[in-house]
Picture (tube, rainbow, N blue to C red):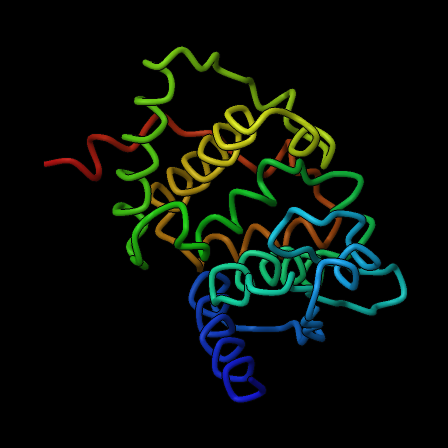
Length: 212
């Protein structure tokens, strides 16, 4: 089991480095053997994983029992990487949760096929978003997706839609801005104190860039 955890963590680390340009964070990975242990850390028995970071620098990724996978570790690790790069205060007081979750969706292949091509991710999320809307899922503006509470405690259909919407938006931004270099530059400006609302520019959908 230890070797599996080690190898899975190594793969997850490569995904983080690919998205962010390199890997600055070194979170401790806590693997819980049962849901009772997991609930002590994450106040839930249902989610696959959670991440925790403190103002004084401690950072953890917690995995729920059989949910050990590069997807789960990568997703939670992305939250830690963002925390490492811009700081605890910035994450909790300025960066909207849809952006935080959208970044995590770039390394989590449960929601889109295994691809590091942002056009590929954009197309998959775009197709899924359109299908969900056709099935009657109402659109939810990002102004209502700014906090952690906006992403939890709702029905399954809504939860799924807001994750897809966040992944779609961030993939779209990465396509327009040529990927990880632009992301790294954005995060540097945020760390220096510039407001997210000033630095993040929404772009029209990337259909013309990604669909021939």
